[in-house]
Length: 485
Ligand SMILES: [Ca+2]
Ligand SMILES: [Ca+2]
Image 1 (cartoon, rainbow, N blue to C red):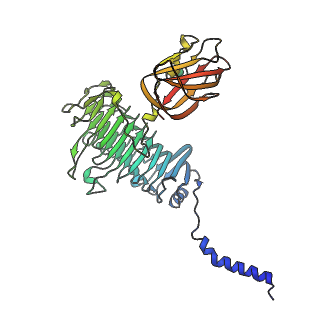
Image 2 (cartoon, rainbow, N blue to C red; image 1 turned 90 degrees about the vertical axis):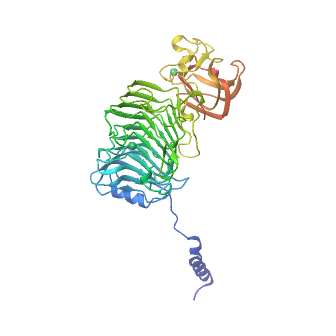
Image 3 (tube, helix red, strand yellow; image 1 turned 120 degrees about the horizontal axis):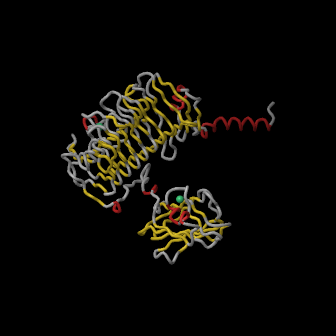
């Protein structure tokens, strides 16, 4: 006999079995941090093939790779990149047998690669091949490739490469740029359409002793920035028939900012631009700008251009450039004042890196309520070194101030104060002024310490002032920095 209560339980269980599929539609998948045992390539490949958006795959040690390319197989999403992160002192991929076209191949969207060394050992043409969009490559070194080090193509867009290095690329002896965007038109993987890779930023990247150009941006590619980067041929002679320049550009909309090309014993130029009509009948190579660029120890010239509308800002530096400013046969670029420069920005990865990294008060005119001595003058708070500081006069505390004159109206939304030596300030205000006399409060705070970052709604003014309401002893500011945002 089934008692009434038991019957109810049976009914409930039955209902559960019927209803279950309704709420167990699909197995839930969760992003996770997955740690690959040091050097365990099989586990890394398994984590890559089963990755979920948002996964962080941690790698460390040396991976000996004797069985081909390491490749992605899953897309991340806009809010959930898939990260491959070297931990500790980073991870090295050491190739010991042929990996064919590429050692490491990112062919899916939304990836972050961090703290990795890809040593091709002449076992692959390319080092890191990227044929997808949206990502960050941070502190990645590619070396000893047969051809290009970093290759970004197939309409790959929105990538920020920072603190990354291409070294000894081009071991085949001819091809082998450090950083290469797109393809020459006869090689477009997107043919008959141009390879429109773009919105790509290289920040603090280095090309070292490349056999071909340090950077090469091909016809059809566009919106590329090279910021605070370096090409160093280390006094070698790069291959001369297919490219021996620091940067070779046939893209549209390129900005080269605060970037140095040095130690080229060959005859290539530091910066070569070439406006050409590609196989699709369209001319590429327009709107290139050079701001704060440096050539140092070059057998060739600083610039070659065949298009006079490209811009050279006058804050360039040449030291030991045998070929002079313009190569033989070159046109001249349009000469422009540095103050008229505006960073090309976009929404997305690397869209704004230069303006936000410029300290607007570095070496600007500073004054203070009092100074301890000339050694501790107001200017020492904006000289870029935490080894020097402004100190107020002996016996002072509250009521002291530090004022900086931007020299012209500036818009800013971030201040960093470094009170490294003597963190005495206990209450302060940031203030703005257009005449240097009448100040308006921006924001306030209490203690500062070794480094305090203060952000606020952007303010435009000619002067900024740190006003010390109270301090336990003299005011000491090692560095005072102001940024756009
Ligand atoms: Ca080249
Ligand atoms: Ca200082």
